[in-house]
Length: 352
Image 1 (cartoon, rainbow, N blue to C red):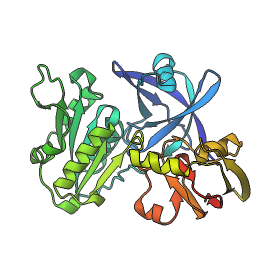
Image 2 (image 1 turned 60 degrees about the vertical axis):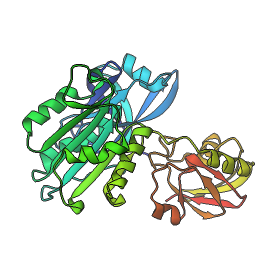
Image 3 (image 1 turned 120 degrees about the horizontal axis):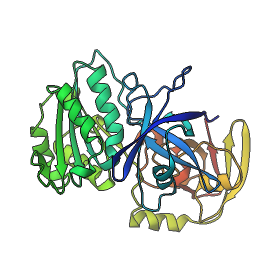
């Protein structure tokens, strides 16, 4: 059963020319609980159709009074443009409760170095993690490497500067700008794997087991940061990645998928009910189920939120890469139906 809540907008802040932050009032009773780094799903009525979109929370629990998301205008994006142009103080918007595994659990007893790599609107969940660490983990420090086009495109530029002034010894703030202009205190260009060792020389070096890395931003930037860290021999278990969209399928994946695409009969078990139907060759499993009016959990439809996770108990499916499931979950038979196609006719999928 999806948990839906209606929240009231208390403020809309223009962060840059193409990004706004929407601040919602926390309910007086039963406040919405969340963890730094999670996202909120907005249910927005556009042209008489309810559309779902995930937006990362920039607010920090037990630090900020409001619960807030940041929305970047996307060309031809129905929801982002609608929100950017119309949302205002006093509006009420339905949301699903916070979700997401790209998280950091604050612990006042911990002593660690949180290193963040972000670019563009990828700063949003990192900003939540950054604030939570500074305010709720007094023994920890934070280093942020933040890439943008120019100084005008830096989301949270002023709040970050204020935090740097408030925590000069615990916050290292390194900007990476393609067009620095008169802003000299930065790296010029984009985040590049070859420069990651140089970046890390700019911040204090802590023991490996006390250092965690969080990466969020455009796909290319995340690949560069991740590969750079691996080149520095950072253990994979200490690297956390948040994707706003799944990478496009490779040529090999397209070829593999094309070989399997046929109409297939499958069975889905959900909430003590069984549904048997045909998945057309042009649709993924979730799309076909929704077309059959089967009410299944979902949010992003792109393999990045994990909310549609289910388990294959019979048959085979093809699943695109670039999803949020762990190798262990995949080995145990878990899939994301939103990016899966049945390979055989005897597929049975069960939801917890």
